[in-house]
Image (cartoon, rainbow, N blue to C red; front, side, top):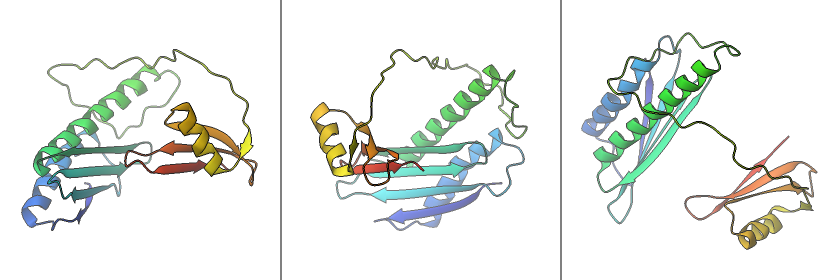
Length: 180
């Protein structure tokens, strides 16, 4: 049912690696019925310190599944990513069931019974902050974020007058989210 786009960086994607990825990620297909044209994008990266990173993204009409994992073993990373994606699917299904009175549940999600139910943490807001946005450019916003010791910072873009967010990425670089 899924189409697979398996790419490798600093590694040749052999038939054995591709078959393993398709077999493991293919197990997620059992959670979905009738998902047209779903493509599983899999990126395999091997670093100079012999660690392997696996990133899987599966965009669906109502949900984007994405997980990444880094470990010394490529095959172990694939297994760990699939486990993360399964947890995301179960969490999504639980959330949908809770809101089923308000929201129509997509018919193409089929969750098989599990031997042991995992408890899904309640999504509870424990703190609310109010702030007024100061017009600034993205460089100043990054400086403000670093001064505060936060991983993200919300600001009003002085050029576009729109709300924007700068954030620190896992690789230590910075990202910018702009709103329309």
